[in-house]
Length: 284
Image (cartoon, rainbow, N blue to C red; front, side):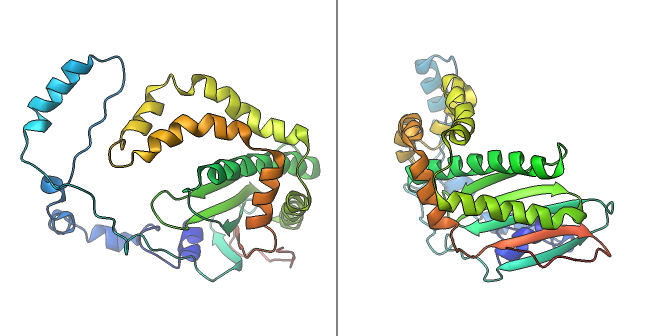
């Protein structure tokens, strides 16, 4: 949904795909100007994972990258560059497409916050999984097995106070009213009371099972150590992640839903075929 990003960010160029003519106008001279001396003077951080000889790895790095001229010490916080805001264009947005007449793309998004609070970040991930379980159950009950969907919680580790909780689905435009009513009913249930133990278990069990193999994968470790010196706090986040995740309760998820979904402004997007006529005013 390119239109989604354009609208919710107010066309902030950091978060959208630029027009084709803008991309085609770029060249290596402009890239060189943009990079400045970053490649020659900025800090390097090297991460190695796997079954390696530690001493041999140290020697290899020392004789190659470590032999390069000294670089800058410390990182620029880029405080001004990290400031962002959400657009105030809440409500319904209709985007047309040139595809088949029975193709609908649908999304609703709520601004949240960043990932600094690890427990809140994990709680929002569970809220997204709980919402996905409910969405699939209720849409399929209403519209059949072909319908599904999901929820996602994005919380930035770079931009302060920046996060988005989204619910998405796809289907047939004729079912928009049912889709939006179903989502509204799910949100109402999430903010009314903690979800049932069954729904909660179905949401968290797959992640709990993944933790068994999580620490055995090189892909996990490279994601932890690639910034272990510039962001040493990520090591503790990694160490604490499983224990925090397992400690989160249905009540915690309910509190998160109240905080970010109850009576909060949101963006609703309907991607519909050209020429489609909206026969529903139900956008809540």
